[in-house]
Image (cartoon, rainbow, N blue to C red; front, top):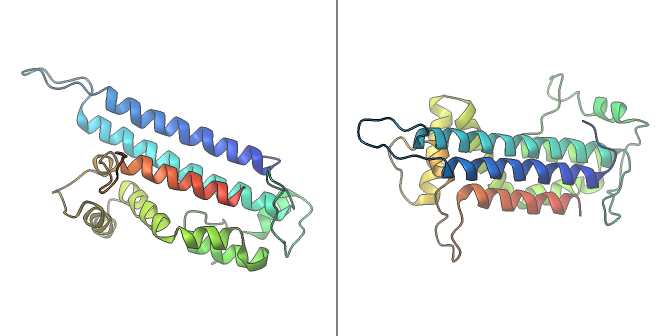
Length: 215
């Protein structure tokens, strides 16, 4: 549903993140270990699948956040702290603003999953492309990594798996054999004083990025 101000967009993002985080947390609590020959009702494999589903919903929430905040800034709307980027366009309606984002790369829709594309778009509509240029460029590594993880979940290709394996190796320092994406996401980040999973680490960083876009 279209929002009328950036504050509501940020609230929607927070709610979506909270629900997804809750699903991933519940999945870990539901595990029942095998008891003799009896198959458990909720297995580690199910946990991994639900963790991946939670991650996908987080990624989708990020895409929605980028689109909704972008369109509202095109319309001149201000953040809760009265920030608004300098616009190069003044569309009269949200529908008009939406149409302005479409004629890109010959596709009938705008891409929001690729940070580089969003940065290019921002350069066309806002002075210096901000806030998207500065925020997304500062989180280049994070955004490429979460896109790689998303692709490993939704695309069962050798290329997607190879790129995901590189993410795993770079983060864990080794590559477990046939590691499920969901299993990687619940592992603890190396070198952290306070234990935190990769999933929660990604969530924290995306949440901070969202607040830099809508301060």
